[in-house]
Length: 98
Image (cartoon, rainbow, N blue to C red; front, side, top):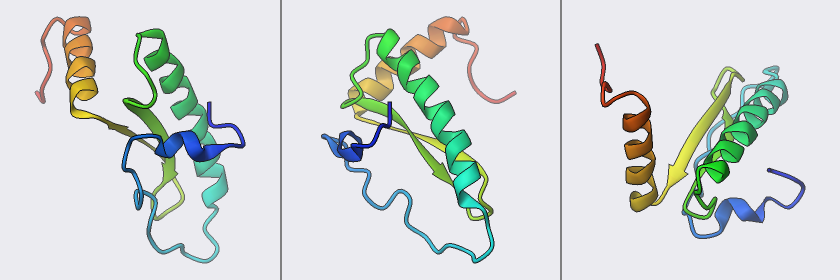
């Protein structure tokens, strides 16, 4: 999913600056990013399986300031609305915070 050619991350979605920030010396960002990459790859495979194009919506691996893995979802408005519809259908429309 992420492979060695990371240009697919920028094909049509403006996600520049998503990972911008200061790195703290001594924090192991690589371990957190690797775990996030695995989760993002799994989510991207699920998105592909549901008929989404990764140029429309995708999961992106990142880390927070403490080096913990973070997965962000970036997408075009139409794809985000379609994903929301699928999730609402899967939960019976019972979304929202309790």
